Image (cartoon, rainbow, N blue to C red; front, side, top):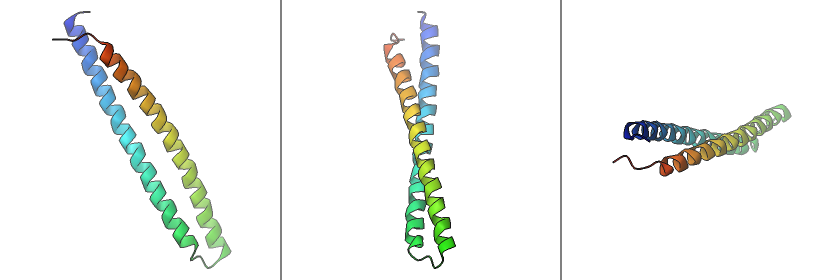
Length: 96
């Protein structure tokens, strides 16, 4: 491979890896925020005075747990993609 081509591919892969890692960080923040909200709702549900209020909070907790599963799945997919790109980058010949 030509050095300029290798540098170009290397630069592109490095940028893509950085973008994926940023997305992974964002997914983690979303998950952490959802977990904090679940904890708050669980505390508040203990103080709920009516059945409808409790039901509403439990529904919200269920939705947040489903969101967390989606965040975890997306995190896993992004991690796999980042690892593939890191492997490809490591296999490129040195440019200098």
